[in-house]
Image (tube, rainbow over all chains, first blue to last red; front, side, top):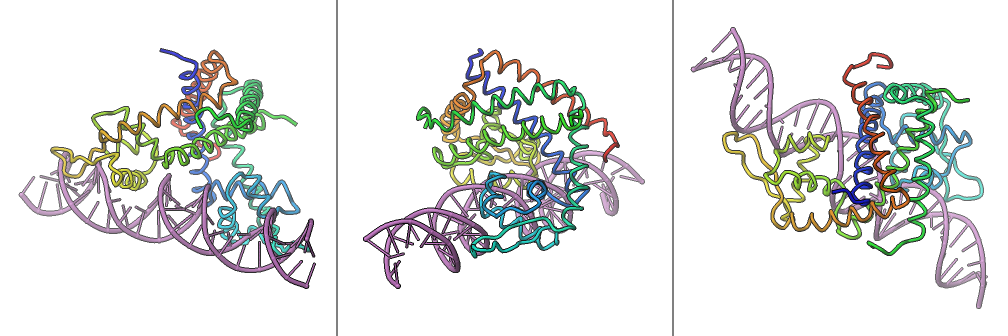
Length: 156
Length: 156
DNA sequence: TAAAAATATTTCATACCTAAACTATACGGA
DNA sequence: TCCGTATAGTTTAGGTATGAAATATTTTTA
């Protein structure tokens, strides 16, 4: 009663269960402690890694979400003065989104708490184990992504 | 430049990236091949494991989503004749949701395809590795969940 | 047994998220 | 230059998700 296919399915369900659990906890903490959401945090995290700002399309590319999605989140963050839209010189279609000074301060606080929450939830894993698992997951991800690129027609 | 906290954060980001990748692919396949969605599939999967049906509150408990959420998904599945609401004798507040015969047939087809997609994406992992990783993830999840129950006030 | 508390579900407001349609701008070639 | 096409971004329609309020119905308790 254990085929390779079933073993992989079980691994996936395990993986999904853990990430959903952690994910839900993070969303809850962000909401209660900072009155924000994970998508908003993700946008600010991406902008924080690019102090010069990112074009809307670059942002949706980095976050792997749709274009229209980023528009709405940017609207709400801009309303609160955490991010700002800056025209791109030489291309009147494009807009650069970047953190305001206030946004930078706010994100620094949130990011530190975020790291703390994850550290708390994963305390049972040693630093060495964490590194080993992360390395293993990288290879899994590469396999999965390559599989996709080859556009295998089975099960299509 | 590597503290235990940072190692765990990196592990989490890795985990999140892989699950989001697989998740997105599954949603896409469900949409294109079956004109359905992952939440709908999840509801049908839960009902499939309980042929006698589940009360709305049990369902939202199993799926770990809000009550109001299940209402909407059940509405749409019921419209298509895949599930049905059955009154609970002796408690006029409650309703049992269960798959219709048509829903059972439809889910069987979708579930087989689902297993195939995951098997394709994770082909690079041997059955033995899959079992080992799943076991490791169980212990991680237990730690994470226990951590929550103790209600540790740090970072609260 | 009447009031109060608990339970089961739906409704509501708000935010996410996607694919597809749409607007505006840029750019390559005839 | 004019046209076709590609690109950047927003808008739209529909489904997903939450927490909180509203309804209806038990169950408890005083």
